[in-house]
Image 1 (cartoon, helix red, strand yellow):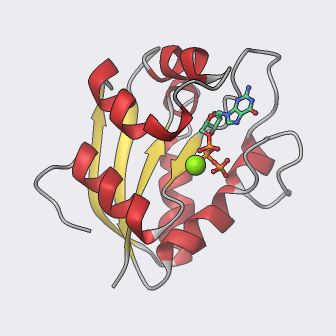
Image 2: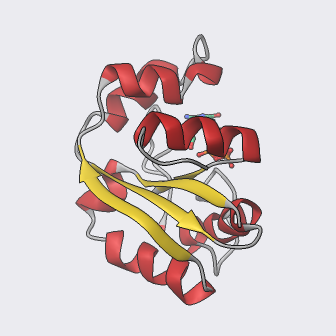
Length: 140
Ligand code: GTP
Ligand code: MG
């Protein structure tokens, strides 16, 4: 079966939404293969967000991701990569559909980076890469 890397970003942890987000993942029927609250590091984030290096939101994004602990999660289930992206909703929380994590719980706070509560891998290759970064002991 498929695995995906999910992060509850610092805004989600700070707002006490970790449980609600895990609840939605489990209610959908996905299994939690790993859950760990931890502080990201610049090294881990440089790897995780390598594709965004050089973009205008990169520095604020890294700063935001270092602003507090993140909940790193590996979920498991048939087509869970696509399934979690669907649960999460669009990147911009203002326009993310109601019913989604970002649409129900997120909004724009007028900051340099979109604080949109969660990250989810976007393809099998990214899931394998990201699970390796956050949980070196696990395989996709
Ligand atoms: P998707 O966009 O659905 O892939 O979700 P994602 O969280 O994986 O977003 P993506 O990988 O494109 O970008 C990483 C993160 O950077 C986003 O979640 C946002 O926090 C932030 N971000 C992305 N695009 C923008 C943007 O155009 N403006 C701002 N301010 N922040 C952005
Ligand atoms: Mg992405």
